[in-house]
Image (cartoon, rainbow, N blue to C red):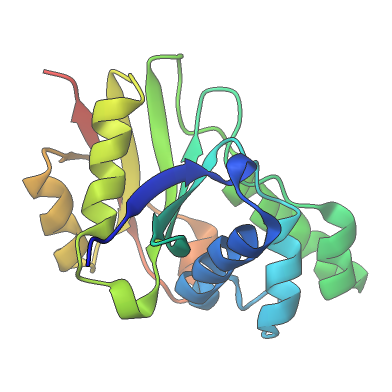
Amino acid sequence: MVVMDEIKKLSTLGDVQVDQAVGVFVTSFYDVFSSISKDRVKLHKLFKCSFDYDLTYAYLRDGVVVGFLGLGTCQKRSIKLDRVVFLELMSGFAGVVSYRVIRGAVEKINVSGFEGVYIDHIATSPEYRGRGIATKFVEYVCNTLGYKYVELDVLAKNERAKQLYERLGFKVVKKKLDFIMVISGVGRRVVMRWEVK
């Protein structure tokens, strides 16, 4: 049996596949975003209406989404939080403060100039982890989209991911201390870069 793998923008997918992609994202980043809501259905609603569908991609295996990729450019990032939906999840003063802090973290531009792109989010369904999907996503961005450099963040303690990116040609260029990551207990991040040779 031949397996059909594809990488497609969310803007080209139907609603069922978009829901699958958002589900992969929510499952993979639940620890980071559970401070907004512990309810995965509500998080799904928030991110489904907050993604830029032209900057987010799905990895499909036989038509089923098993991976998610979000990119950021010098003009925008893959998430622009929907304020109304966010404040439905977290109301009151705490909601307003959380919205501003999280919005700053997910919407801040990380790339200067049109020659680069930033991998905001990369995720794989739990049952497909370790099967090369993240590698194929990264190779797709580096080799297909035409950018001169690609940057991404990885948790400093995530040695497995750092080693993967190093094998693909990325090098650590700086370390970051992100308030959201610290208060959520996730830890420090390092920025890694791949450049066209």
